[in-house]
Image (tube, rainbow, N blue to C red; front, top):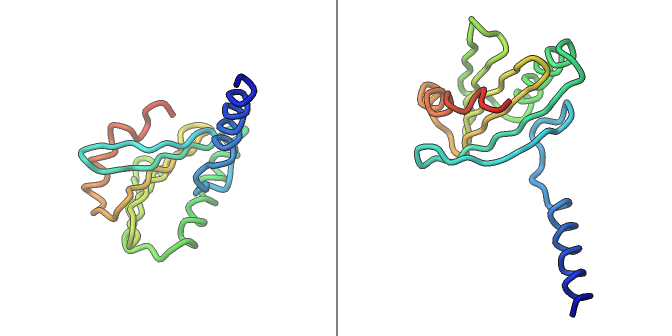
Length: 130
């Protein structure tokens, strides 16, 4: 009985380690990914880390370019006070990408939203625990 319990625990651990959601951010070192519910809407958050500040800047602009390759953006809004924050609305989702020192965070809505609504909804989590 103990052997079966041990095998079950081992199988669960292997499943958890291999059954990950595919990453959106292909650059940088994966830090974490999780989903959050705010105001009845689901958001997916993914964080990556770079070796240093310079690599994060370079990686951020490469990631923005990668996002443009995924789908046709319908609307884009840059923050002119912080060039390391961009919101892109696609047909099926709205995405915010931001950089903080050596980290890059992606926040993705599970359904398309107007940029202003999305920005207000995610403002409380944008830089939280990055």
